[in-house]
Length: 217
Image (tube, rainbow, N blue to C red; front, side, top):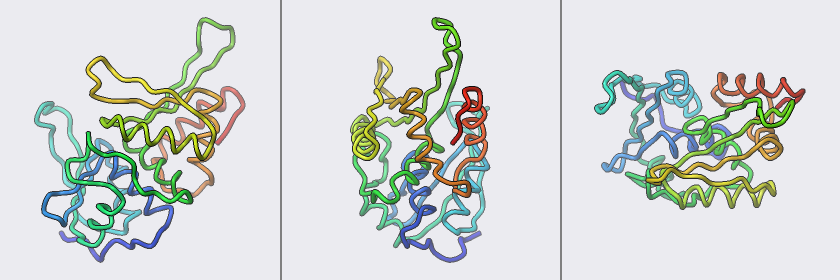
């Protein structure tokens, strides 16, 4: 089944949300034409289709290293969109090589919300070291240190918050974390209004956690 129509590349929150998803869970084929998006979450694969206005089959396949894990894949061809993605800094096989991207300030947090839905996480807990201390973190991940450095600098420039970076001993993945106060500032920019392209399940999880301390996004 072929996509109906081409991607509308007029700048919009939906377009840059999709670019955030491609940056984390997508790839550019070497043929100069096809864009592929892969996710463990079928809802996210459908959302990716919706925001780009494409209609093609959502494939399903098993990870070769972990056959029990099944993933969903959206693949479509659009030469013009492919070249646009190259122009903002994405490349084939970009997982470890992606660096700074050309994302307008106006749409940066839409892009970042897609990045977060694709490969970010949020977690919260009661800290036993202090009475009534509820902690929560917003986390962004990438296999590229230079890309995480760019995210941190861009967020600091736009919001004045710093976050901190961590990595495992093998430095396979880098994490940019924002705790409590800074996290709340950031989340309110990611979810700046009700009707936004996002993974609703993740947004609900965050809101549920924040209600424990009387906060909201």
